[in-house]
Length: 575
Image (cartoon, rainbow, N blue to C red; front, side):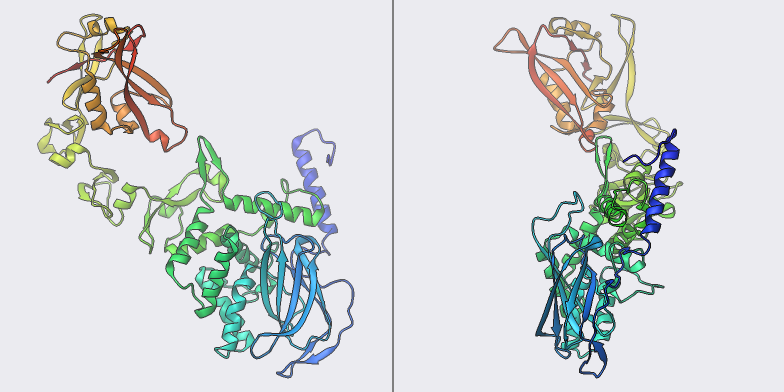
C-alpha cells in the first residue's frame, strides 16, 4: 500500500510514521494489550464467599490468553474452586478466544466461589513463521474474582497455580499470601527483579503486548520456555509446586543454557544470523502492528514499543551461571559459572547488529578457560600450568598464549639464551629478544640467482619458497647443489608432525603450504610409481573453508599424478 506520493525516501518514511501515529490515536480507546472490560453492561448479582466478603456472582470474566497468541476459537473454561481446598466444585463456564491480542471472555452465572481456575486450550502462533502450532497447548491461571474481573492467562500464571493450591491446602496460607509467595519464589528461581514495580505479584495483569516491567518479565519467561515441549513445562511446574524450587540443578541449568543459546548469534560464512530473541521480537512487532492498526507496519513503527525482554532473559542465565554483566569494564574477563564452565566477555559490533548488544558473553575457548584466575599484566612474562587441564600456558607481556613445543622442552627464551638454537618435534627455533622464532634463513640459487627462504622443520631444512612449476622429469634439476626433492616419506613425516590429516592452518601458513582463504597446491616428490611409468607421487595441500571452524585446519595428502602435469618444486636438505 502506497501511503503518500513523495519525492524523497525520507518524506515517505515520515509520512508512514504520521499515518501510523494517526492510527494509534484513532485506536487509543481500544485494547492495547492490557485487559479491558467488555463494552456491554451485564446484569450483576451479589453473593457471599465463605469468609463473608461480597463478590459479584453473575458477570463476564475477560482477559488475554497468551503463550504466543492463541488462535481464535481456542476454548476457555472457568471452574469454581472450593475456598478451603481449592479443588473444583462442579461449577464450570465456557468461553473462547475471539479478538486481537488473543482476547477472551467468559460469561458466568450464579458463581458460588470467588476462587476460580481458568484454562485455555488451543493452537498458538509460531514466532518463527506466525503459523498455528501443530499441537494444542493448555495454560492455566488461578485467581480471586473478589478482586478482579480481568484475568490474563499466561506462562507465569500457568507455572504458579499448582504451587498456590499447595500453599493454601497444605501450608494453610491465605489465598493472597499464597499467590504472593508463589510469584516471589518463581521470580527468585529465574533471577527476575521486580524492584520499584507497581505490578509485582499480580501476574494476571501481565500481557505479552504490554510495556510494564511485569509485561517484560512475562515476555522473558515466555521466551525461556517457548521451545520446550509441554512435558518439560509440566515437569518443572510439578517440581516447583512441591517446595517452591526447581528440584535439581540439572533441570534449571539446562533451561538456563537454552536461554543463553537463544541469544547466541550464529555465523555462516560472513553472514551473522538473527538469534531466537530477534525472531521473537520481530514477530511481536508484527503482531502488535496488525492488532493495533490492521496493517503490518512493523518496519516503521512498534519496534521501540516492545519492552527489553532480552535483558530479562539474560538476567536469568547470568544469575543462574553467576556471571557479571558483560560491558566495556569487563571486556576480556573470563568468568567461571557455578557449573564449572567458562565464559568470556567479548565485543563485536557486527554481533550487535544481529543481537541487542555489542558486548556479549561467549563460551570461553581452551586458552581462556585455562587462564582463569591467573593474573597476567603487561610487565609479566612467565609460563604456568593452566587452571583446567594443566596445559602449559604463557603470559606474554599481558597476553595469554599456549606454550610452544620448544618452550615445553627447554623453557622460555630469556636474555641468558639469546641466540641459542633449539629443536622441537616440529620446528627448529632460535632465541631472539625474549621470543623463540622458527629458524629461517635464505640461500641463493645458482640456477637463477634468486634467494629462497628455508626453515628447519621435522629434522630437515625445508624450502618455504617454491622454485617454479614444471613436469616431474625436470623437477629434480631445479634443486640447488646439496638439496633434493623430498621423498614421500619426508612429506608423510611432515604431515604427521604438523597434525596428521587435520593440520592447523597456522602451520600451513608457517610453511607456506597454503595462503589466502582458498588454496590448492601440488608439489612433486621424488617417488615414481612402481606399476605405471606415467605416474609419480605428489603432495597436495587443500584449503577450502566454509566457516570459521573449518578455517582453522587444512589437509595435506599424497596421491599419484601424471608426470606430464606441471607441479610445484620445493626442495629439502639434510642437516
